[in-house]
Amino acid sequence: MYCRLCGTKNIDGAAFCKKCGKQLSVIEQPADQEAQTAQSTHQITVSQGNSNIFCPYCHAGGENCHPVVKTDIKTSGGGYGFWNGCCGFILLGPVGLLCGACGSSVKTKVRNETWWVCQKCGKEFISKQSAIERANLSMRTAAIYSLLGSSAVSYSFGDSEVNSFWVVAIAVLVIAGLWGSIPMTMTESSGLPIDQLLTPEEESSFRTRFTLLCVVSILGGLLLGIAALG
Image (cartoon, rainbow, N blue to C red; front, side):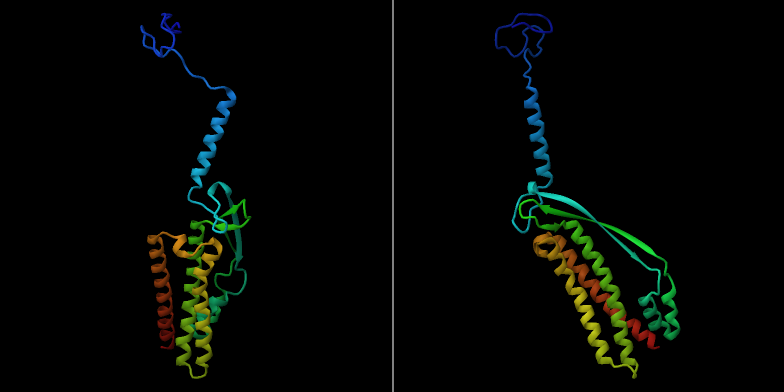
């Protein structure tokens, strides 16, 4: 065996040249073997990227789950703002109904969500990050409605012409339905209960934020209704 660099003769099977020390033989892979190796590396990379994903329905691994981005486009405004008018009425009386005409321009909101599709059972389930973002949006909406509902409750007790029982009953049903639907929606969309979807730290943070928003919005609405009575 001769060194391809300096030409020195070496014994057969030698790995390095005895004169220059360079490697004598380089193992080359055939083209088809290189392609198979590259394909295997790509499959391993994809599998590792989905290692934390599994189908909650048939428990298939991440290699059988493929992401799909769904875009939700909502257009609002362009008319009378009912809730703006309600807030104005609570704070300013009948004149406050004019607040419903404020900020009536058309607004378009675009929101992207990542869903996973299982190739085995065909079921779709939302990613954890998108489930958390959807829950945060629902909590903000529930807080606004809780603020308005509790304001109407406290205002009704100070107005003798309003039937307080029905106001309280409707407000309680609306508020309880809004807040109770948030964890249920997370479970239905992700296919997993909250204690399995979130880590213990994430679950603790979520429940703390959930409780604080609920309590603060209700108490804040009660105080606003009392302030509106003067």
